[in-house]
Figure 1 (tube, rainbow, N blue to C red):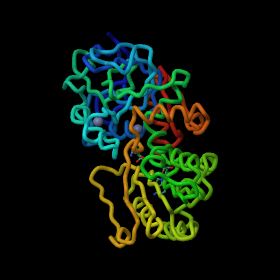
Figure 2 (tube, protein in one colour):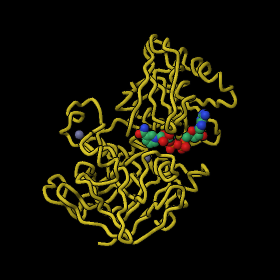
Figure 3 (tube, rainbow, N blue to C red):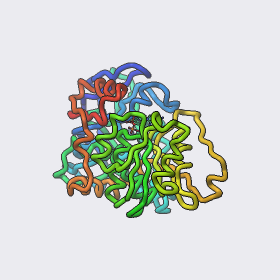
Amino acid sequence: MKTRAAVAWKAGAPLTVETIEIGGPKAGEVLVEIMATGVCHTDAYTLSGADPEGLFPAILGHEGAGIVREVGAGVTSLKPGDHVIPLYTPECRQCKTCLSQRSNLCTAIRSTQGKGVMPDGTSRFACDGGEVFHYMGCSTFSNFTVLPEIALAKVREDAPFDKICYIGCGVTTGIGAVTNTAKVWPGANVVVFGLGGIGLNVIQGARMVGADKIIGVDLNPAKVEMAKKFGMTHFVNPAEVGHDKVVEAIVDLTGGGADFSFECIGLPVTMRQALECCHRGWGESIIIGVAASGQEISTRPFQLVTGRVWKGTAFGGARGRTDVPKIVDWYMEGKIEIDSLITHTMPLDEINTAFDLMHEGKSIRSVVTF
Ligand SMILES: NC(=O)c1ccc[n+]([C@@H]2O[C@H](COP(=O)([O-])OP(=O)(O)OC[C@H]3O[C@@H](n4cnc5c(N)ncnc54)[C@H](O)[C@@H]3O)[C@@H](O)[C@H]2O)c1
Ligand SMILES: [Zn+2]
Ligand SMILES: [Zn+2]
């Protein structure tokens, strides 16, 4: 069948909306009609050409929500009409990692996903007779897409697609880092470096679990108002206190150091500050930000010897099929907020505007609706 999709033909060029050819779902696969998709930094990173694993031409997008339209042979957990969120981190419940219950980094389809193809080694997309790659196993910038059954979370049907698509990456990454990776306890002091879309979700996750002080760190004072609305109690601007005094300022504010810190920027220098502002003996720092390819982090080993812990998290440590439906429930029950984070909504034809707004720092999240 044919569908409309925004195609990334080459690095650095705008996407173009094309009518493409999409193959039906093979065994274990599901055809999904995407109703809405967010545009995330990772899409922009790959499109820029800086991602060493980026493949072209490809259909980008990994933050979607939609409806199952057809299932392939052997699919048992989903049926046409089910509402779903695609998962770039699948959950097979059978691989060593899934069975360990210690990590969400399911390995079932990792190698083919990284090569831009389905688990059988082929793509379902073609345009002008040539093969087009899948992206992060999702390709939500297409009105119809094909995913493995294990890469779809079934969610409740009363949840609005143009809001819950954000749970497919940003919301879960931020909130999951708090609830799954750090397991922040009530009364903890939390520091959040970077008050963008990810940092704001860390903040509301920290508020949800009952954190005491929630300290935000950002160079842009325009971020303060929104961060306070989401639960930030204190703000540190490195440009005001001095970049070499950030750690000291936080140690003072927390009476000795943070119980938890979250780096949501992607810079080695702030990753180091985030570790070193943690409380001696137990403070844990969680890296969420993705640093540019080839960069390295450093600190004095004494920081770890004296009990600080350095960790990282992908997709908020969430096991997608199990945890994503719960986060949709939290949204529908009013425990977390999404609506005000979606600052722009546009049709597929205007998808390049979403990238412009992101680069200009004018959006928190843009959502494309089909
Ligand atoms: N680990 C994961 O699973 C995962 C998933 C999604 C995104 N990410 C990463 O999370 C990071 C944040 O994403 P986002 O969408 O929130 O980005 P964003 O650009 O919206 O926010 C970044 C914020 O950091 C601030 N900032 C920049 N440099 C700073 C500095 N030196 N000191 C203090 N503040 C500074 C900016 O003003 C901005 O408010 C990115 O690196 C992204 O790639 C990780
Ligand atoms: Zn993302
Ligand atoms: Zn698995």
